Amino acid sequence: MSSTTSIRGAKAETLDVAGVGTHLVRAGRGEPVVLLHGLGASSYSWRYALPALAGRYEVFAPDLPGFGRSDKPWDFDYSIAGLHRWVVALLDRLGVARARFAGNSMGGVVTLWTAMDAPERVERMALFGTPAFPENRPKILWPLSWPVIGRIYEAAMGERTLRWIAKSTFYDRSKVTEELVAEYAAPLKEARGRRAVAEFIRRAIPPDYKERIARYGSLSQPALVLVGETDAMVDRRGGERLAEALPRARFVYLDRCGHAPQEDAPERVVPLLAEFFGE
Image 1 (tube, rainbow, N blue to C red):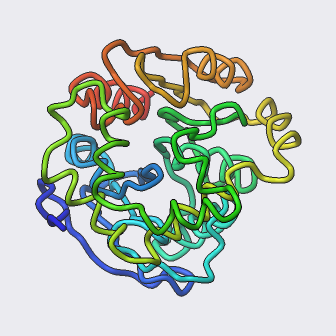
Image 2 (image 1 turned 180 degrees about the vertical axis):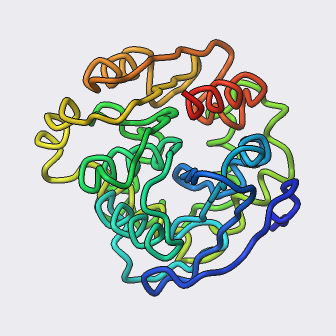
């Protein structure tokens, strides 16, 4: 794997968070910002945003349990609720009472859950390509949830799968570099890394999803909901629906951009994020 310590001005460290050895990249000083990556990604996905935000904020970008360089416990709860509880434990470990959040895809859903279940910890939230409704589930990986076939699919995940998924994730194919492929494919070489992805997919739609969706209207945090034009998971209507459900949301639809906006079009997305955090 390439080193995330190559992110300009950032420091990488390993912390114990709720019993999980956690890879964390941090930079800057000021009020706290937490950046949460998407499924199969890592803190590396914030390599453009982190240095830009560090001039004004103290920025924390963890590898969530099961991903990147963090531990991949076999018995971890890789559900949205399990990851949300871990994020709260991370805030406690860092001594952060309240933070601005940005989440991409899975990280956006975890941010939403944290805003619901620990609202005092989330000051405002940027939600990029966030699958907030069942119809936005990642169809390309849904076979992982099927009996028998899902186990075969899980065992077969690797660099070839990653390259295939990356082609549908990015509008700008030049962003799919060998460094990016190496970074995101490395955890899939471990059975534990493949299992983390598969278990999240299997639990992607929680039993109380209808209740959760109904609670979107009770969230008071300012929100920036951003969807890319070529996002194959969350289309424009999915983003608009989420922005309409959140009382204090602004919707941005970005042309020539896919499911990972902060990587695909950083020159346009990072300024939007910095502006939103500074409001």
